Length: 329
Image 1: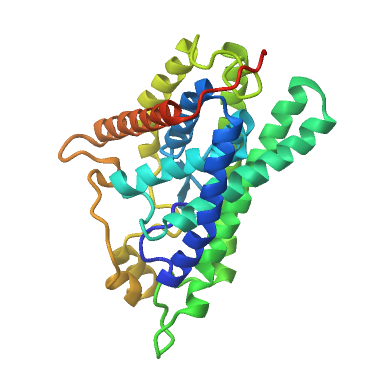
Image 2 (image 1 turned 90 degrees about the vertical axis):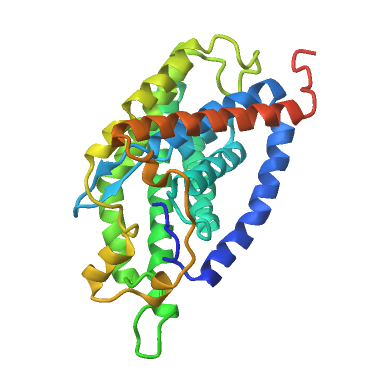
């Protein structure tokens, strides 16, 4: 679901980025007002779950791959506005350092995965939780909400791909960017997300949420206890996920819409001009690789770097935030 560079027109990317600008502004405002200062570093750990989940590629029907996002998980723990910032920063790190998702398409990727996904997932979670009592209602809401949220995000991504050949073509009718229209892109993407990727999203969300409730009940925003105490089980889970990330290498093939230009040319018979002459960002560790090191080593190092950056960023944000109000006063 990471839209690569030059698969969307510059105007499409610009519209998505402009649409996200007020969302980011509101997210910063809401997080400053709603999240206790001592809880803010925990958002970095929640963002690490998102970053790591997106590294676990899984095979999908049709020979493509997909991944979970865990945006709804962050929304459940810290609110949907916190999820906007957490997923956006995770996507920024992936795009800049690892070339996973385009720089120009960053706004579109954030609109789908950092905005729509957590808000849709959280709305469904809240609706179910209000009608089904206890832990059963919470976990059921998390499962259904995360499943639907991921699939709505995938649908938007498919539509963004699919409108490109309808709006942007050469004089002879060849597509300038993504060459597959909506009647191809929507069923192709939704088949894999409705059947497998959505279930993976629900599994990650419910599994991590149940673990946190059992091991560290104060991890989320609703219990305003000291935010960074007793985190050994959470750190252990993060370490285990980092060590397991090379499992994502077992899924062969590319995600739908994330092909290299030469691979796309073989599929459709030509290279769209926008891809051939488009702008490219030279990432430091492309595809989570590190020079001549084995792929699995590069994957683990990339996971460590991504997690560390997320934790540092949100800890710095906590240091810059205003002092927390005493909720027990």
